[in-house]
Amino acid sequence: MLVWYHQPQVINVLFKEEAHTAPIPGLIFIATPGKLRCYAFKGKARPTPQTKLFYAPLGNMYSNGSFCTGNCDTPKDNSLSSIPGWERFVLECTNTHTGGTQVLRSASTYQEMVGFYKRLAGAAAKDFPTKELIPVPGEPNQLTLQDALSDGGAA
Image (spheres, rainbow, N blue to C red):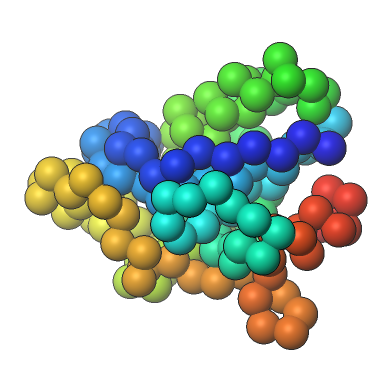
């Protein structure tokens, strides 16, 4: 298993018909051979085992933290050299649908997600509004990084 994180950043969020330069929250990546899960977290500090996880506010997201790969090429291993490939897959892939999971409080459809990022870009926002993040359910209430790692990359 390979685990790393990114602090919040501003990226080009790509959609089928358009792209918007907007902020995203910090992301935690968990790779196992041929599979990636990705979660958001609040703040800029390095995550700890107790860090609470939220759905990554991106398209193509499933409720278990994985993504629809569509026709994208993804790394087949979880070595250090696969990190750039996994990051390209998450951060540079076109968001084409919601994956059946609501990842933003104010956007339950694909078009609402596009509109959310369009508004952030139009306001030249530098920080992601973390009140929009939706917690990943876990025992007893919300999934933590420790919980996500203790399942061995399953889910």
